Image (cartoon, rainbow, N blue to C red; front, side, top):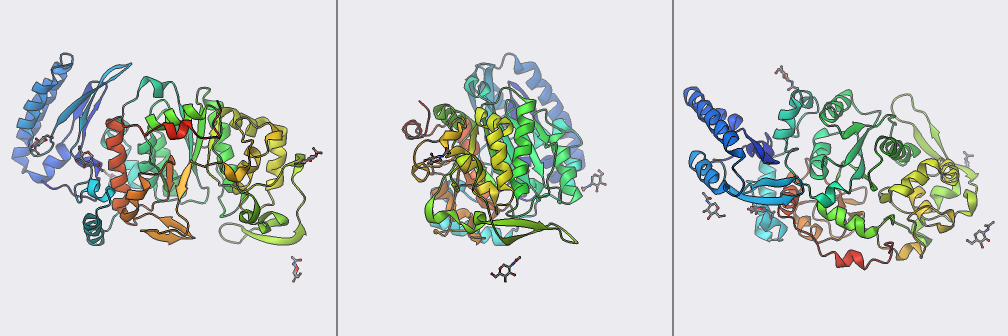
Length: 477
Ligand SMILES: *[C@@H]1O[C@H](CO)[C@@H](O)[C@H](O)[C@H]1NC(C)=O
Ligand SMILES: *[C@@H]1O[C@H](CO)[C@@H](O)[C@H](O)[C@H]1NC(C)=O
Ligand SMILES: *[C@@H]1O[C@H](CO)[C@@H](O)[C@H](O)[C@H]1NC(C)=O
Ligand SMILES: *[C@@H]1O[C@H](CO)[C@@H](O)[C@H](O)[C@H]1NC(C)=O
Ligand SMILES: *[C@@H]1O[C@H](CO)[C@@H](O)[C@H](O)[C@H]1NC(C)=O
């Protein structure tokens, strides 16, 4: 049986098991392929079957083989069920390994870098352009939150005790294409974490509505309390993350690290791996720092101003006025808008006077988000917690991997590689935690296959070699 790709890759695989309590819902698939009478009979069989499962649940521990034999007999076409019992502190979590999430091509071979399968994938994608889920559709999809979470895979995770004790806070910046936000959220979602979504104030109403609808289904996912109109290279981009930081700090006392992401990024480490790596960081921030020629001095040598436009977003222009030096004897360092920030560093950003003075100074800088974090982290005399004391350029930066002007197998947009299927082989071997970036409708199998790969790693509890991280010079010992 062949699953239609565009409806939803995950819809075809709705056998989710969570904490030993599971639901089985092949209805949408069945109804599509069998006549009504048969369907009614099938519903009856399913009801019996569900009842069987429920009554069998408590005795399932250690005796699940029998179940899967029955299931394979009843639905031999749908699933090749192999079971795996994973021990966690909450007891045994029963998970089912689906054969594959992606059926159109063999993602394993693509990720191994096999040229033939990569070529196949490209041909397949030209024949099957991706139609992303319309933003408005999310109102329907989320009308029943439990069904939404089940069908979109949000109940399908495992959480170890170590992960549960180490919550992470995320902010995600989104301005369009809610499905891509949802795909990213799916990859990093765990019940103990907390997520702040910043929707660009100038985004279409459908985007705001869709994000509201999704966040409404979760206790630990929320929309930022103050939205900004995000202007390319403008200050509001930085303010958006700070708004989320403040909300996250207020809402939850437990999280240990903060990570900011745009919806075009994707993790290449599982939550379990991220937790283990952050524990090794032990309070150190992972913020990029560059000095010298790479600093783009015109961005901070002159005062920049905003001109409101009749329609749409304000424009930024450079004046001839020379900009003052930064306050508090702070040295200018350039970095990235993205990073990994310890909780104490976030507290410093929100409450420290020197941090606020620097933020004020940044208002007239072009792309201030590429200076503010770097300057806080690479001026140890400020006393920002977790900051770096060595020469900025020497510090490895592992928050995000992006390809600039190197061999990109996808396409370049503003100098950054938008990944294609041919990039995956290289990406999965990287030491960074996230990669930037994907476009949902450009070579969609790239994101699909990475999703399948991450899913497999999650449920196989695969862990990268942590010695690399233990030997990093910037971690706190
Ligand atoms: C299911 O998987 C098992 C082992 O992974 C394999 O031996 C078997 O042939 C598969 N069955 C089908 C129907 O694909
Ligand atoms: C994921 O696991 C499934 C089942 O073991 C396997 O068939 C598939 O090739 C794996 N995918 C990747 C990308 O490794
Ligand atoms: C949502 O569902 C209603 C009724 O079920 C339907 O009329 C409407 O077209 C759907 N909206 C979208 C955006 O799919
Ligand atoms: C800035 O200086 C240039 C020449 O040095 C001049 O042409 C331009 O009008 C000045 N711009 C402003 C805004 O003063
Ligand atoms: C400013 O920093 C420089 C070195 O970075 C140092 O030599 C100087 O004494 C500092 N000045 C003040 C006022 O702290």
